[in-house]
Length: 259
Image 1 (cartoon, rainbow, N blue to C red):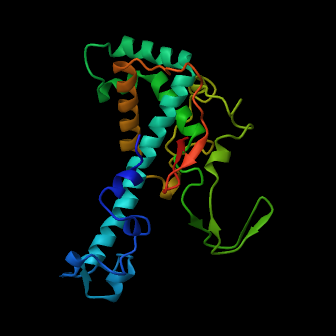
Image 2 (cartoon, rainbow, N blue to C red; image 1 turned 180 degrees about the vertical axis):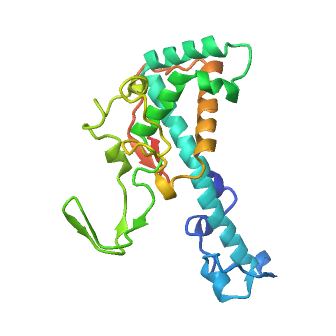
Image 3 (tube, helix red, strand yellow; image 1 turned 180 degrees about the horizontal axis):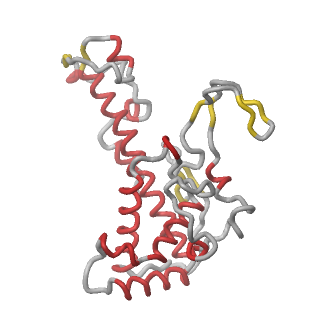
């Protein structure tokens, strides 16, 4: 599957789409200024310093917004879906159980609908386990300490840039038995109470509290429906009958993908 970074490259030059840069030599057709009344809450310095934006500014800002929206909304979902499919191909027993669940609650004569998701509990466990093993943002987004504090014996000065190691949390052997293994059943038994919406600190693929991902409902519905449809409509097999290499590579937006 293409990551959103590759999709953006089709429309925006690398110098704009990679850096969000709004200055420098613009294309000849982008020299006409656009006058606007900038809002004080808009953080980009170009708007704060000038009474208008050139088309080059708009061009760069649009690329920057696309990077933010598409990377967060597409690359994360496509990466998670790819990981889920690879895990299922490497674990045919899990795939078979999911197929049986779909046959029972949906059948093969109609498409999977959103109303079916409440009955697909094993599919939900597969999605949770995929997000646990391969969180879309392993280090979450950067935060900053608002005051001096001590955590685990370490002094954290005010203004320190903080990164939460979600991958480590979700692979903690004190919280998860056999943390490196793909075991969706754990979310039907020992971790049945755990969700992915930031309410349980051992599983935080979307972050938590005020900084939680605002698109959780959309992401989960799209993941569940897409994965369910693929399992229902296709016979998923690895032609080589060999295990898929689960080594990780990284997109330009720091999303992990199977190599």
